[in-house]
Image (cartoon, rainbow, N blue to C red; front, side, top):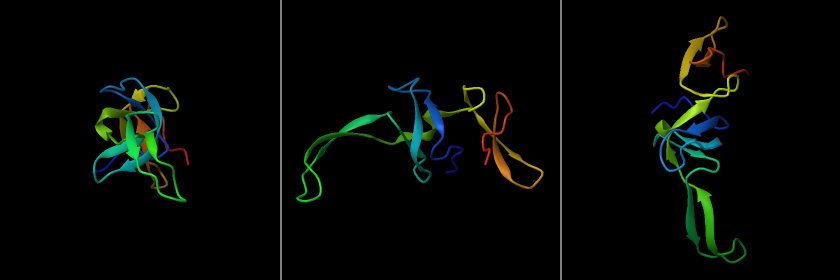
Length: 107
């Protein structure tokens, strides 16, 4: 599955228990069609201690969420938007905001 969002993008959750929350993408999992978003879909994990490595206990961490439940936040207009693709004159393929038409990939 091709994802139009990448690691490091700012996204907003559009459905589910965390609707309206914003966060950066920590990891993209294109084979499963999921992403891990900072501060979203927090789950508790019971962790067994391993001597000389880590303590045991209950830790909180982000779990993957379906990529269709998040929308990219445009850095220019600061609104959640769909993503379009466009070819530049030099042949590069870049992502474009569907609301304001600005290029998302500046580098």
